[in-house]
Image (cartoon, rainbow, N blue to C red; front, side, top):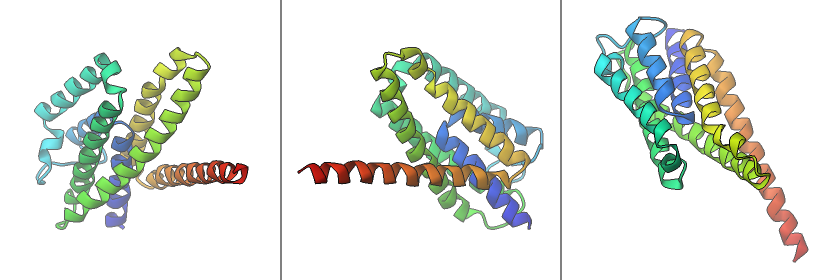
Length: 195
């Protein structure tokens, strides 16, 4: 049962870093430093709760806020996605290494869950941003990263404190992914009919 809870916790926190990397990782590291729901002490991943690593996350978070225009380019979003996938892999493996000897598969699963969240969130944010910009609602479009940060923070916090809720977060992302693909297939099917 403990293994299942640790896997769910890892799935939730890696999903959160796939949404936005720095704030969820910072929350998980801070909770681990206080031994609240997760603890990386005595593991290969003890650096995830160390003060210097948390400071690096804070600096990176502040930098992305101030460099928002550069971050919201395709290259900037891709860089954030890569960082989120890496952090998700580390946090998942760290969640397993806390109470179990075998943790290496957490790197693979964490990267996979973070990648899923990245793909879905980039697709949704891209579509919503385009819709807002077409309606000249630039303020609403600019707030989208804040919503993603908040979603990542909530998913990370709830996954650490109550790991089974990760099932809801992952299930919601899978449902959004399938709905987006269905919508895309219908759109292209309509275009084929017009020929």
